[in-house]
Image (cartoon, rainbow, N blue to C red; front, top):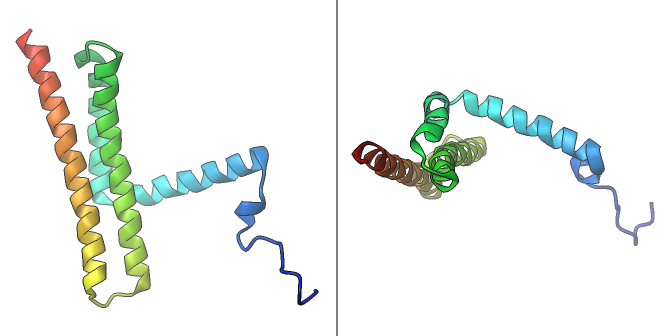
Length: 134
């Protein structure tokens, strides 16, 4: 290897994949992420709520915009929960000792989950109010 020419091979083999191979590998990693998320109690609870709420959205929503908002807020809660789990996992990977920045990162992730839940509840309450008051 020439010491003046940098090595062009990627450190991560995923970066070198192209086309369908990349898509298939990315899909497998995404499924592994969902399985890891399933290991979290909060994500399982939100998934079970989604099983009820997603079909209900088609009944309550009066058009595609309302249905999309109802479904979108439920999925947003699940997405934010997965991201919070990723942050917590990365922090825990660094070490078990207490640190102000680690606590701050975990608290901010938790706050993001709370805000997404409040948004979801607000949208669903407004839709239910409209549905039952008409």
